[in-house]
Image 1 (cartoon, rainbow, N blue to C red):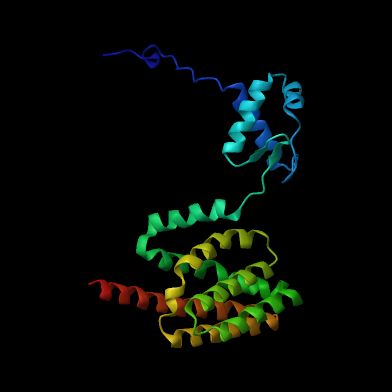
Image 2 (cartoon, rainbow, N blue to C red):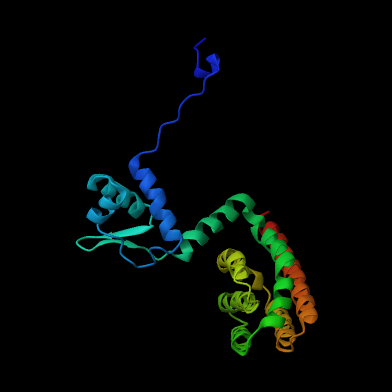
Length: 248
């Protein structure tokens, strides 16, 4: 039986981090704190080498790793620049995770989460919305009515309506929480309008939500959103059963 450090009551020593790894951690921390902002150039390799007391080779290795990870962009002859993060960098992996974890029932689980969150968000929107928010909701509602016979377009404006409600809540974390969910819906939502009558029902519920927010009636906005998502759940369950019937 081979002996280990633990046999003698000792602990194995982990490999100490490389200099480039330590510098990478500091630079990432500085970027997250906006010491270096989006599209801003970092100091030159020579300047960074002097700041950290290391060789240019160590700095070059650090910058290359940050470039590979998409945090920096190395522009030949110009230097290393902080990249502007793409929302897809976050949302696409979330979509894949939902698909992996939930499979065909992903939309059902998403609706359950929305039922927990969005009625309260609608009530907040009724309290805090601006005239600009109201105009955005009105425009989305009008476009839903215009394109209610086009499954893809009505789905787009349906989701955009809900996204506008989230921004109208004036809590900056609400859109951050809901945006990944709406991103998944953009990919899987259109089939829900398999029946033209569903489009009419959906438009009517959005109209009720709009009126409640317009009147700054938080309770009515909460109830209208809850009722809308409950009906949406029923529509989705019918679609799910229909797909199973077709498959069998």
